[in-house]
Length: 416
Image (cartoon, rainbow, N blue to C red):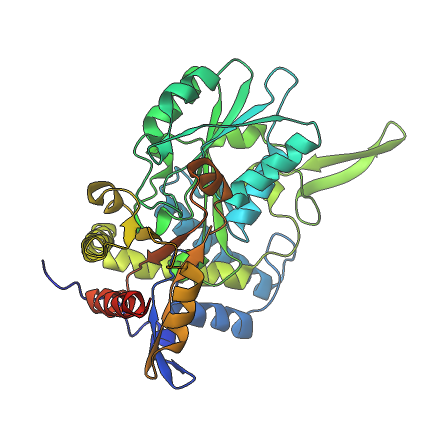
């Protein structure tokens, strides 16, 4: 197999840093990608050169330029997301923010108030709906796990005329790979009259999102996993569903007017996405997010996908040579994602100890990997796997990074 070279390095300044005199081997991109120089520069330029309010609130020349830049960022988000129109794009602070917004805005009724989650959902999806269930507003159900995948037969039995919403992540941050059953699950939900939401936080960095043809009615992803600034993200909602959502987080900029009505007041909300972007927005972050979209689109989605698949195959093959660990999943499934997770098969091997070893054993380098549940408690609980060691990749990752990790893992296991 060829030794995979990184697609981009120079545009990620953090890779050139030394911390405590040691270079970094970064294998934690599923948590957050390192940040693109171009995205950071776009955010900085916006803050320093513009820094004002958008044109929908003000009418001076600066506000007009801010609004023009913000609208261009929305158009870039729509293109990257595969939305039918920029009007379907709601800018958010990330996937967590998006799910909380969506959960609060969803039009549950007394007849349809059940939410079904896949067992692979991140806590950012589980917890907002869990809180609604605790408040007695919905009934929450979780699909059983079967072979590290959602149990489709059980899911089919769970769907009913009371099912309002089904949430399915398209790429697990715990097991890796992708949810190949997603389209079938979406079709089953739609046949039952339910809405489908996709958490694409782990999917978007390595796949074309294609929102309008994915089978979902709404989806979300985070900018920070794409090399964009923290506190940026996208919630895409199809036009028909968007018209049904009710503003749950309100403030300035979301209404046409507030007027007297029958001794009280009436709020006349703006249409579409404007109802959901309350308050002063992260205009500078949106500019950085648009720059990240541009950088990834210049690389090309197919090139990025091939690069990540090569890395996953290479890592899974290398890890399979160690008898004292077990790689979760099978290579042909894993290569469709961007990470590899493994667990020890001997009690002497503690993931937390490995993490200490990787950060203290070598004078010239350290390894950034992730151990634990990765905020995927549903997957952990339903699988009985208390935690994993996770290697996750992005466009700057190389085969050499994986080689160095494998050598370090060999050294750790030899020390037990």
